[in-house]
Length: 263
Image (cartoon, rainbow, N blue to C red; front, side, top):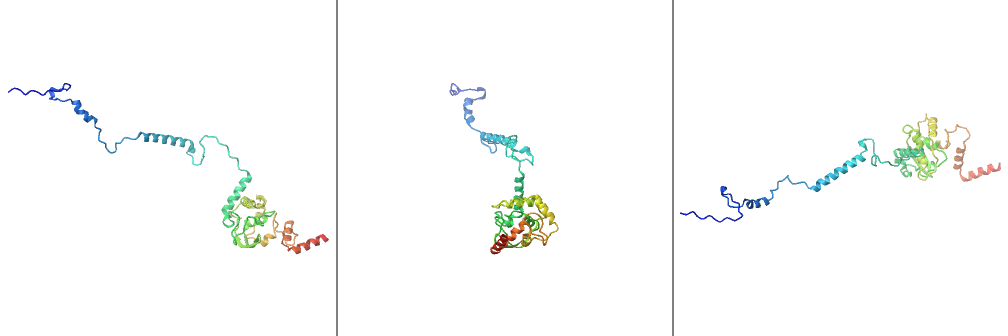
């Protein structure tokens, strides 16, 4: 029986008679080559934008630390880049330092009773703002009050108070007392003059043996400036005489002045 005729092959077919292939292998695999590999979790490519952003952030962080780290020293702080020259701060004057100390002492020891406004607490603690005990020519009485405290009734700006002020002789230095009294006498519209450290030191020495708080009556017998109260029977000083005359009723004061003119 004759062999069956072989099927005609395409003219461009790649034949491999030895392997019995009668089709183009490239065409068969072309469809497979067009297919992408199946995705696998955890193998996604990183976005180039994320890589670029990370690089920029790292560069900025390094630049910032290099210029604003204060060389990583715990005792250095600067809001300016390292090495950048800035205008030097003006040194603090003695007056500015004194005022700063006075404000600090007041805020730490006095503000609870006398308030930040200097108005005190109505009916309890007297005001310092506009006080007739503060706005006087001298501070000898105020120094004593701060050193040893004040107790009993006192009239300030025509209003009566009766409370107890603590002693600060053991907790405040001469500089602290001078600074806080200077602060009080120059704040809230007060016109009192400054208080020197030497004044406080002298009065502290004169009253070193005193433990009791002062009373308003005792203080009114002490000159506004200078040392301790005059000895019994001693003639009053000018400041004490002024205070005595102020306390006189108008008719008695007028009679006294008329008597002096007549002489």
